[in-house]
Image (tube, rainbow, N blue to C red; front, side):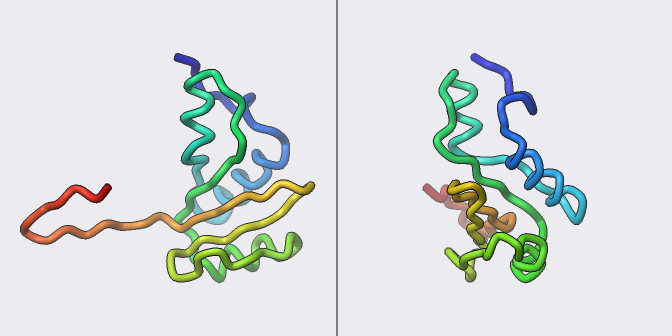
Length: 102
């Protein structure tokens, strides 16, 4: 299994990650991580953050952010003809009867 390093990501992806971490916490998540571990080139790179939706819109306003899931806190930006999704961390709350969410 391959290891993940900053070298797996391009300059734009590192810039997005650095901006998220400058104002809060940010991580690269999803299929990109899986693909790298499997030795594949990621098709897209998604991010997760603790920043609020409105803050994300302001931070990335130069890229004309699109609302793709405002109720879930998901924002899409397009840089160099590549779409990137940035999602707010989600919190799953379970009651007494814990159920696995698939």
